[in-house]
Length: 195
Image (cartoon, rainbow, N blue to C red; front, side, top):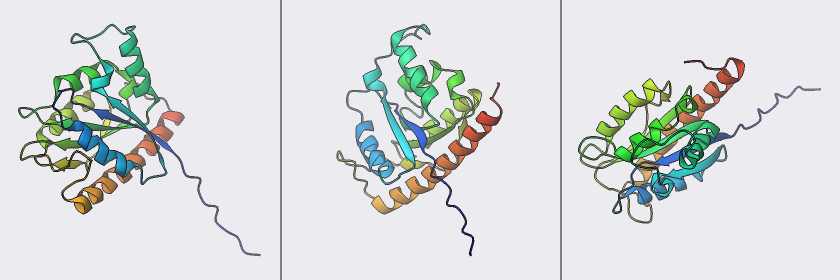
């Protein structure tokens, strides 16, 4: 009789995709369509897309009991990990994204965040570097590898100019994000994170 090694059960990670731009003429929906196609190739993800343009957060920080704030906070709490889609506007990220990040607080703690950025010659990486500082203050863990699109290299249907390169970058990012999500979820289960 030979022994067989049991196959580990596939764990599913809840990922919230946050579309950070709310401008009327934004390119974020094209980038989101591209990302959705990448996520659909995986069987280890449960995706919640949070489009800030649909959330209608007020211009001033809402009270914690505001229904819009409660809805966003619950969705952030329910996620194991995050992918932030951000443009680069004037070497920074959009105010709408900062507002949405600031509404929850504890719900970000000890969870991983990755980035898909676009815009300008840098592909949005200056905005991402600023966001890394913000998420560090929220006790979130930012993932080293992300995807950056210099200029807008994705068409309205979500097809990237360099489809192979973009898909390869997405796979690396998602593999790292899932690893960190599972590791941090297990750690939080053993010992709740206290900032």
